[in-house]
Each structure stands twice: as C-alpha cells, then as structure tokens.
Amino acid sequence: MPKVLVSDSLAPGGLEILEGAPGVELDYQPGLDPGELPAAIADAHGLVIRSGTKVTADVIEAGRVLQVIGRAGIGVDNVDVAAATARGIVVMNTPGGNNVTTAEHTVALLVALARHIPQAVASMKSGRWEKKQFVGTELYNRTLGVVGLGNIGRIVSNRAQGLGMKVVGHDPFLTEQAALKLDIERVSFEDLLARSDIVTLHVPRTKETVGMLGREAFARIKPGALVVNASRGGIVDEDALLDALNSGRVAGAALDVFDEEPPPADHPLIRHERVICTPHLGASTEQAQVNVAVAVAEQVRDFLCHDLIGNAVNVPSISREMLGEMRPYLELAVKLGRFQGQLCRGSIEEIEVEYSGVAADLNVAPMTVAVLKGLLESATDQVNMVNAPVLAQQRGIRVVESKSSHIADFASAISTRVKGCLDRLVVGAIFHGGQPRIVRLDDFMLEAIPEGPTLLLHNHDRPGVVGKVGSVLGEAGVNIARMQLALARDRGEACMLVNIDLPPSEGVLEELRSLDNMISAQLVELGP
Image 1 (cartoon, rainbow, N blue to C red):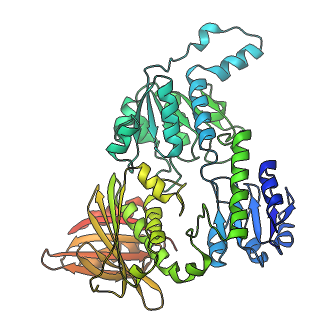
Image 2: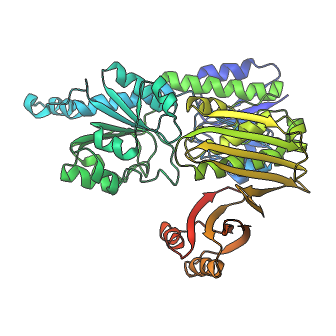
Image 3: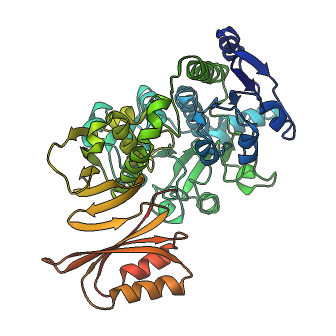
C-alpha cells in the first residue's frame, strides 16, 4: 500500500482526493520540524509539500522508498531536483493553478497604484480628509506595457483591455501572428519603455532577466510612468528604482516581490510614500490554494495508482519502463533545445527536429517535447515536459518533427534547426555508452560534450586566436575544462566550443569579442 506524507498544510479538497484513493495511506503532518522529516519520510512513497518543507539531498536519501514529490505551486526551489532525479524520483509541480489569481493581483496593484488607494485609506483611518492630495490617474486609453506574455501576462493583458487600456507587449518568444490574435502590439523592450504609461513585468528570474529594469531601462522609461512587479524579486533593480522614484522619473511603483524576502523592515522602497507593496500575495487566494491542492493530489494519486506522470519537472510523461532506455536521448534533446534557445534571443518562428538511426526507432514524441522544454527555459520558469508544446503553440512556434531513413553519419542522431531570429542547425548524437555529444553547428563538424557553462566562439581562421582566448580566460581566472575546434576551410572560419568551470563576467565576454579575428562570442548554460 503506497503511503503519501503531506508535510505542509493542504486545502481539504486535496486531502480528500488522497484519502479516497484506493490503496493509498495518507499521513498528514503539516508543520513538521526539519529534524523530524527524515524519520517521517522513511517509509513514504509520495511526498506532498508547499513552500514550507525543504526537501534537501539528505531528506531525499532518507526516503528509502520515495517515488514522487508533488509541489502544490509553481516553484520547486525548495526541492533538490538534481538529487531527486539521481534517485529516479519524479518531481511534479502545479504550474497553472494560480495563473488567474496572480494576474488579478497584478491588476489590483495597478488600479490601487493609479488611484493612490492604500495611501488614501491610511489617511482616512488617521482621521484626515485629504481629497485633493490623492488625485489619481485614469486607466482608460492609457498604454500598458506587458513584459513577458506567458499565461499570466496574457491574462493581465486581457483584463487591462477590459478596462479600455491599450496594450503593447514584449516577449522575444512571441511571434507577430500570435500577438495579433491577442490584440497586442508586439514591440521591442526599448519601445515599450518609451511608450508605456504603466509597465508590468511577468518574466521568470533568469540570468538574462535579473535587473532587466535597471538604471539603463529607467533612463529610457516614459517620464512619470508607473511600475508594477508581481513576478519575481530581482527583476527590478531596487536601488535603481529608488533613484528613479526620488528623481521623479518614475511616478510610483507597486511591488509584490522583493530581491530578499522578507525584506528588511527599514527597506527604503517599503517606506517610500509613492510605493505600495504586498508580502508576495500573488497566489494567495482561497481558490488558488484549492486549485493547486487538488491538482497536486490528483497527480500524485495518478502516479502511484496508475503509473501516469503529469506536470513533471525532471522527467517526461512516459512509462518508467521506457524511461531507462530513453534517458540519454532525452538529456541530449533538452540540451539541444537549451543551446538553440539561448543563442536565439529574438522571435522563433519554427523549429525542425529530425531523428535518424536508433533515435528514429524510439518513441520520438517525448524527445521533441524535451527539445521544446530546453528551448523555452530561458523564456519562462513554468515550462515542463507536459506544457512545453502548449507554450510553444501559444508563442506561434511551428514544430516540425520527422524521421530520416537515409544512412546517417552517426548511429543515432537528433538534428534541430531553428528559423526566425536566425537560421541555425545544431546536431547531437549518442555515442557508445549513452554519451551525448554535439557533433555539428551549421557547417562546423566537431565532437563536444554538452555540459555546464560553455563558450561558443566564431572566428576567422588565423594563427594565435586560440592562444589569445586562453590568455583572456586565464587572466580572468576562468578555467578551461575542455575545448573543441572545428574549421570551415572554404570560408576560412573556425568555431570553438569551450567548456568552462564558471560563467565569465560580461566584461570578459566583451574582451573576447574585441579580439582580433573574433566574429562572435556567446555564452550558453547547458546544465549538468
């Protein structure tokens, strides 16, 4: 009889599903002390959590028969996913359960900010009647700039249109055709800043988005604009926002998230008279709590009782019997997608995925999903092996899947070609022993291990380039783990894929780009 431990508070609807599952034993212990968790999880087959429980590698090791971890919510940052994957434990989340709630909170912040509602309430409660002091901004016919048009950004756009607002949006992964269907004008980030009366952010926290609304952005923003952030802390540079508020460049800000949570009590933004803020309440409604509780309970039940995998963040939705054979191909597919997604910083119109050799004889559908997951990881933190095709469709990305019958150069290969912001071919192969390799970049043939931070360097084939690259990295303290070279002799050009221990600073990248005979230098993070 499978046992499910629930170590955080869960809405009754979720508990009822687990209690009613045939053959499932429910162990409900909300608020477990971290020291008590290893003993409680020792005989549990499933673990259901929210944000309170920290599932470390030690906790996972203590779960001797643990098969699945279900997180009621989007984020799995409190779960050591790598340790769970190494143990063959499925990690699930519930990415869609609080989209509407978060979007509604954004709109509530937007309206409250425009009409000075929190300040007016505080004034009246202190016994004052300061009607003239709180003259607000009418939202009708104003321009809302939405940065990030995933599920939440789309809902916010729809609600804003209902208020009679004009909506412009920026999302590098959204095609013009998809934007037209949403009645949103797709613009560049710079154009959005210059035109928007209110800017709202709905992007994941990645190395590309941290600080994206910083000093340079505030210098471009429309004077007197309002800023709303209910996505992730760190997307807005808090020091830069404070300066923009004090200078009058930004008229006001509404914040539900902070770089440090909870923020210090004396945080200058919290105390600022033109800032309204809430303690990360985006997903905090009764309906959202019920939605995620029911969703995670159903997913854990279906996995333990019917061997079905849904909304998994670390494995595809396939049977466990097939997973062992397909794991190397899925790993390669994700990394090919990551490679393509991080190099293409504009709109992607199409991705072609072609399988040859042994790969073509397998069930290729999960592998294509894995490519899409990797492709979209830099655009959203809600992508997984279940919703990647839907997110690609929403962004107007055409997916072309095929199998090749011709004799390939490799016994088993996956080819990916992206069209849109660029046209790039990246091919991977599985070598003996299930080892994934990148074997082709456009017309450059090589044999590179797709792992960790990796530099892609494109240069004219001249003496001394490799030595200069090594010198720049060495002087910066960046250790080279591996280096693969390839030539296109007919063009007199060369390509290098350099595996490094740690990502270099932007300054080091600029120094590499400025080297004689260097055409381009880009960094990609391919993961473990």
